[in-house]
Length: 342
Image (tube, rainbow, N blue to C red; front, side, top):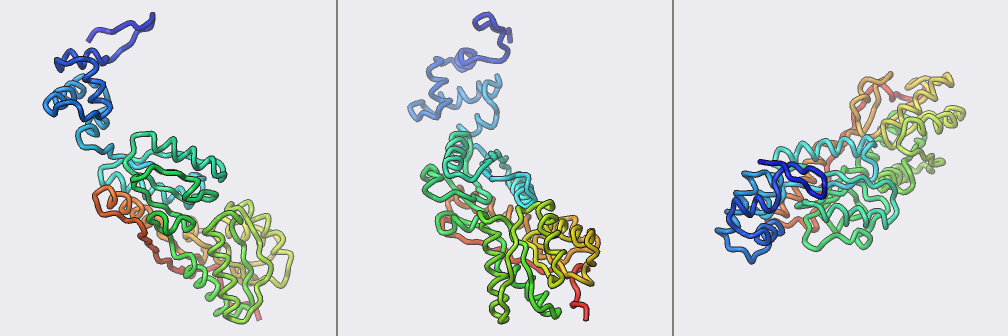
């Protein structure tokens, strides 16, 4: 096909006129087919779509979408894709979507302000997507999201539970198991290194820690906060290491636990002989740290697959509004916990 010149620039690839010529229709008819207009006769529509496919006028996926009514694409919004939980969940979502013949379009939200979430939802819903998954919508509400009516949605966020189908790990049971494990070893109390105050999972884990201590008749000690990073665990850990009364710590994720363990080591306090440490997540490094980390495992793969299932169920005519999937957690006891020194 010859190259064309548009306003002095050379343009390669087919034009709408090329498609019209091959299909034997007007350029206006091609435009109507491209926008999904129902005013085009089925035989004419099929002739135009065939011409598009032959010439490569539009991506094959978009051409198929005009036929089937779907784009085979799921949108995914998250606040921080680089965080371990978000990254592992995203990996599982992509895997599950691909196994069902769908691709995933990502959109990163860099802060938790309501307007940012609204703008992100609007930007993504304007794209060629069939459904939407939202991970950790911290700062968002159903009102601030303002999602298009009828868009299949699934969320990994308890804040939106009851408004959209949701998938979450059993944060409460996992945290209870972690604290109960330390108490059963004989520790008189358990300190908690929590996640950030604006995080729903962090709030749930902190609430379960406090409740478990209360049930045991133990006043909750001071709550410490990090930001999910190993660096924050290290910073808080320096303060915890300086307190000789601290001999058991439940950390809201594994990375902060790693930072805490380093701070304890530098202060000359041994894990688990002097201080027992429990994490949450069971990321890949947890079994290979020194000592191996006792932690609560949440199955990110199951979470990601369930999110995709909820969206596809809605697309296939089995709406999941109100669905709530709670994925069980599992306490993995390794070398970072032991009875207190006598």
